[in-house]
Image 1: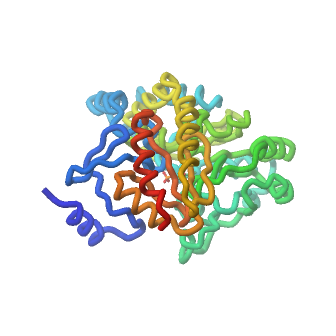
Image 2: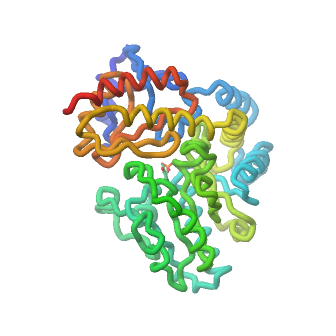
Image 3: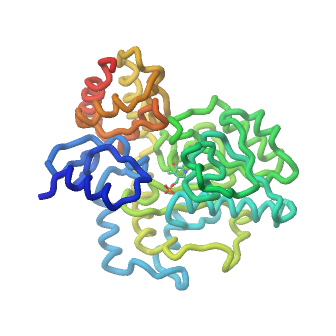
Length: 399
Ligand SMILES: *Cc1c(COP(=O)(O)O)cnc(C)c1O
């Protein structure tokens, strides 16, 4: 048997160093628990950045995948398949939209939303093609393509990757006035995460999304919600925008949509918006494939049937309350919504993350000082309590 050390060494020898994983090898997983090759167990409190809302190897989702594996997995969009229509129907019902466009990764869904918004700007709003502007927020995370890092304000994400894509305007997050002020006659859309996940679980002021909705409507610009991380129950609502009773014009979805098995992403919107695509204008070889459709369909079925939003809301409130009881002068704030929680320290959180892992809890610092906790939504209260004991051990001593 290979040791974790051997596996890590080989990974580092051949792999591009665009990630710096924590020194844990996950060789096996089940629900909330993961195991290294040496057989040590860990609580997965990151859930692959919310892609594992259902936990690892949810038996109904793996069964749906297995069944589809034996029927047909890939058709390309040159032909129809027998599952995509059901995926469409369920995703449209869940998001309250008339149409969906399937892709694979979150970044591709973001790109799709940007193309949709530019088309809508040119074809519907009447902006001269090539002059469309899209407003985005500082400290956003929308993915890693060149156009997407154009929108980023993170130096590490952009350094050496120019020239960038024109047509983006950056404003502070959580500031509705700034949005109002940034709008010009050429503005096609505003793209925003309802809660900024990657930058450290930043929750906007109450009423922000309501204001955004109102401002976008009044100025005839599209409100695009990037719910790749917050969507599908993570924050205690099916979609984080629903916390303020707000409906964006375009949903950007990914991560949990793949049931923890496959990359599945999508954009949903009404016909007057997504209907602007004609054959040849956009696509993806793997987008909407029958295996992905079957997995996503089952995932969505479980989300609704088992009321994941309520589970995330209740468990999240319990978890956050317990985290707030941990006494450590280094802790600046515990914040979040549902099971998307950030613990911000006054200094680098890397040492505390190391302690967490030593105690059997997998989490990772995001933007230096904040530890993000986003366990699978299926985590039980018993598991939460046991994980909390370990977190307390890791956090109770100043480092
Ligand atoms: C993860 C993420 C993305 C990108 O998704 P990938 O599948 O990694 O391309 C986009 N937006 C948000 C908010 C994300 O959290």
